[in-house]
Image 1: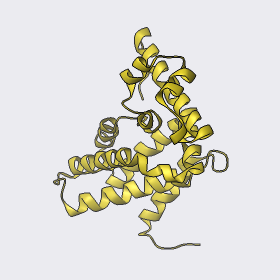
Image 2: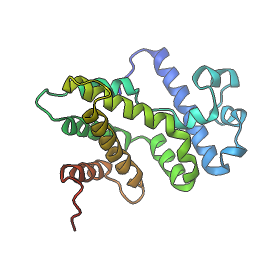
Image 3: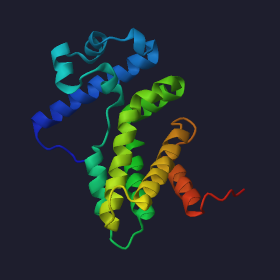
Image 4: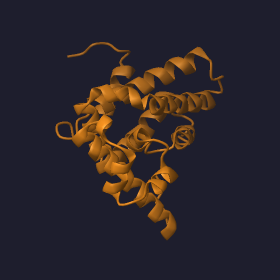
Length: 196
């Protein structure tokens, strides 16, 4: 997550974040079916035209990815060559989760999904994009094709561990999401053996 330097770019990011914060807050208070794009714009203090410069739908404003999957793919690919895929993915997501855990928008969206679990299916596209990024990075790191059984199995298992950690995390009760990720990755390392 790079830090923007230009004033115009900072204003664009601030507007985008204001729209996301407004959308998530309204979804939490009223439920998605009772929230309109106009409501979001009024809460964020912008016009509907401005909204559509950033998002195509109100759901996109709520479930937009914090980090471009291509950036995640690059980070995993660029990890030291002597790391196993599980170590590379673990390191990248530990860093990412440590950053996201300080984001109020990410916290509020996590709470929204706890309160309204039926909304989880609306973030399917984001989940698929992350899994594809992991698979592409593992393929590059191993020199194997994308459809190789190892690549597919490893990427699905690693993505499941990432999702399990994120899904278990609760901002008010489990403040250390990186520790949850560490535990999920340990379960994979242990070959899914059940331990007390």
